[in-house]
Image (spheres, rainbow, N blue to C red):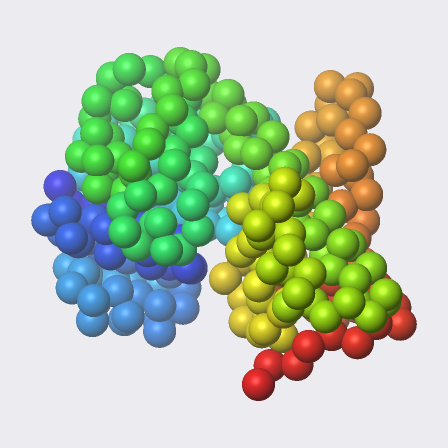
Length: 295
């Protein structure tokens, strides 16, 4: 298929590599010229700053923008890709967005003749690049079928949540609750170790070989031990995602005390100037501790 990847951040660039490896003709769309030029250098068919600037129609679009506003603009706004989609071409919405935004985008695309799969993803850049992402998707069976070649290329596991647009977004938001709380809890534990004078390398080694470990602790607290906050997922991403979590709790009138605390930690880290650092930099909200420096 000729597939457009909209949003060439770390996940988008990984997904385009998987699509190219699977034999698809991949067009990249990103306002950053350096991003879509990198896609072309990696074997992509073409790249452009907007979808309207692509030279040939595309048969499917995979959206991996940062938020719903970017997704809407890239699809339906001025210069959006809508006119470059072939009739009936499906859209795989894989950005982490609210349930309301997923439903609204699905309805607006359907009104223009393009079915949408509400299909958030997880796995990080490495899994995206190896075609091993986890997809938690909702939508009609026909839309799953139309996007099967794309799903085969980018995912190791696809969960068909339901046929209701918005259910995929709900599952991803709940997943992000866990991811954000795990990072925040790991940062708190490592901060306590630092305050107590326990070497962080030792603390990390103990936890990763004991029952308190989690995937997020093992992955993100390694960054703390190394003093390397080069971002793969930024603090500001979790300000957005945990904001969606807390908004969902408010909409359902359901208390989320741990998620609310984690959101406050990430928001504080962002306000302190750490928003563009790796999300493990949330540990920097704790005062009076010495953290390792990158060698």
